[in-house]
Length: 223
Image 1 (cartoon, rainbow, N blue to C red):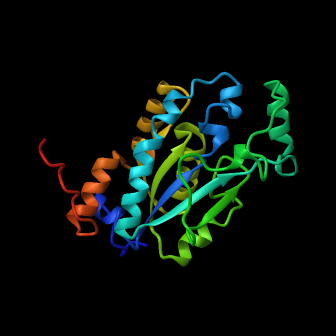
Image 2 (cartoon, rainbow, N blue to C red):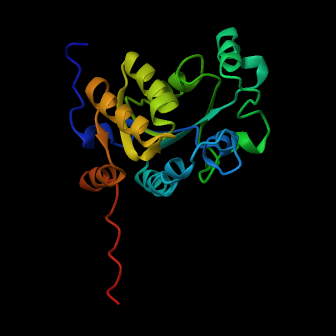
Image 3 (cartoon, rainbow, N blue to C red):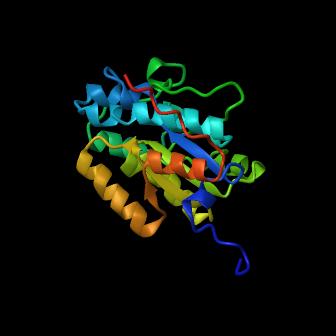
């Protein structure tokens, strides 16, 4: 709408009540040693490096009163379309990640608290044919703070589709990761060019502190 007030600053886009922290696909099959991608031979170190800053960011978001939403991929056979099955055949993939009720589908290093929403998806995007958009609308959310795995696929797909239906999107660079560092960097550049700002978790926390949603953490005592 022409008269709508634009959210132009990080403080506005991160404000509790207007923003949600979206945690995409931080699951054993995508992050853990022994998971689906590890069994395919992927180097998991770049993915796993994003987990500690994400854990800290989730804790700080909760302190600030920002809604935290977990997006969980479930790729059971009955949810796989013909194009998905064709891709698997073309790539000679005979394993399926994130099967319902399995260790691989469970969260890795992060976990929703009682009452925090979990949105299940069956495609890269957490927006298409899921309950995420209605959930966000019920909470009055206008701005999404994007984290998770992988930067260039499911995180970007979710953010892109949210942008197309008029959400602000911000990507937290050190709390997202891809299986290849170059894929991550290219996705960050594309995101900032086409969809929304790219920030660090420290910048996001500082924005919450500036608006009074968080108190700065006390500096450690000198030894």
